[in-house]
Amino acid sequence: MKRRDFIEKTAAGTALLGISGSLSSFQSSGVKHLTILHTNDVHSHIDPFPADDPRNANMGGVARRAALIESVRNENPNVLLLDAGDIFQGTPYFNYYGGELEFKLMSMMQYDLSTIGNHDFDNGLQGLFAQMPHAKFEFVSANYDFKNTVMDGLVKPYKIFNKNGIKVGVFGIGIELNGLVDKKMYLETVYSDPVEASQEMVRILKKEQGCDIVICLSHLGYNYKNEPNKISDLKLAALTKDIDLIIGGHTHTFLDKPTVVKNLDNQDVLVNQVGCYGINLGRIDFYLDFDKSKTTQGKSIVV
Image (spheres, helix red, strand yellow):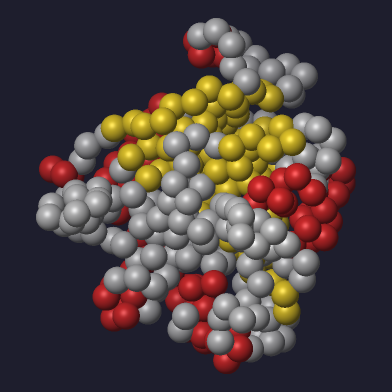
């Protein structure tokens, strides 16, 4: 697992969203800076892709990601590290260890929070439950109800973080399991409408708890052009309000920069996803001024 000699740090697709002038202006006294780092659909890819891979040669790998995360934390101590689900399934590591290694490595990288993807049910609820002690981070899902399962109490609808006086509320949203996952894998897990669940989360986080930033960890999928009635991250952003950032998964969509969507109040929502297999690491920087007005910068970083 010690692959330090492989570490390279290259950045791609830098985009400034709503920023004018030099970033140095945001380093002035009184402006608070929060960095969100995120992954999705890593699918048990622990090692880098081999040198002879036709598409992703030498890319990805946990060691490189860990080094990159460490470098960002050295730059700015106010970091949240999040995952949008599908941690499991995709390499022999999962077949052999059942998710133990994935959770242990994420814990070593000090992930703060994850939501649950459909493939995280691949060993059934008992399989997921068995690996939970290895996760030193928490899980959120606002539209999966686990109360009649072994996972009862292990997944919360949301979590609130305080980073340097910035109050950040993060909630999770999962894709409908019926027709996608075998019923015997999720048993009595109850799915509810993601838009309604999101609106309730926003009410709690924004109105009741007074969060400065509200983030949705979604495993709905980025967009479904051929299925106009299917809920996606882009639709969720447009049908809700007071969500600042949707971090997505499921569709393995590679975005160089976040997509900006207008919500019900005609306010900007950032929607981001960084593909799959740990090839990229998403980075979103929030800058909050004295009156808590927000400015953002977003990019995808090649691991």
